Image 1 (cartoon, one colour):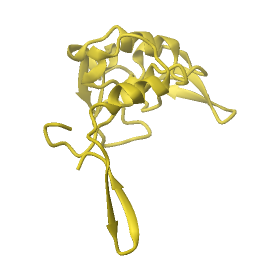
Image 2: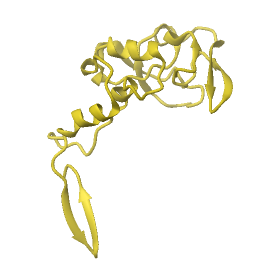
Image 3: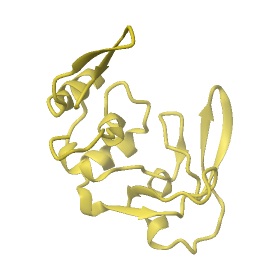
Image 4: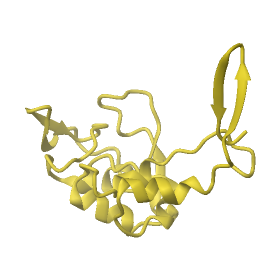
Amino acid sequence: MAAGADGILLGTAFVVAHESRAHGRFTSLVTGADESDTVITDVYEVGWPGRRHRVLATAVTADPGQPEKFIGRTVVEGRPYLVPRFSAVVPTQATSGRIEEMALYCGQSCTAVTAEASAADVVAAYAGVLRSPQTTETQGRTETRVGQ
């Protein structure tokens, strides 16, 4: 923000939040990773075609020529689903199978994410990056802008 950014993404920090429903293996891999463990890839295209993602490097990102087959199971809103290799599905607590081959979304900030914390603590830790809000009156409306 100090360098002029308009916003920040905090997905990686929230993966390991106590309130997260991310699979335990996923969260432990994130807390043990640094930015050199991440890659940008388009191999996880089932369910999200044509989109590149930053994920933890896996056997799947290293060898995208592997056969397309089911590598796990998950439950979404009470309904069971098979998880194919190359799926964009996030491994949750309801997921079983080859977690290490699934899309383990992880940004370069993982270097700073070393332990679980509450979501409130994650927000508080990053709140200091934002400048004080500025309130302006525009056509009878009050607008609050953070980081302006």
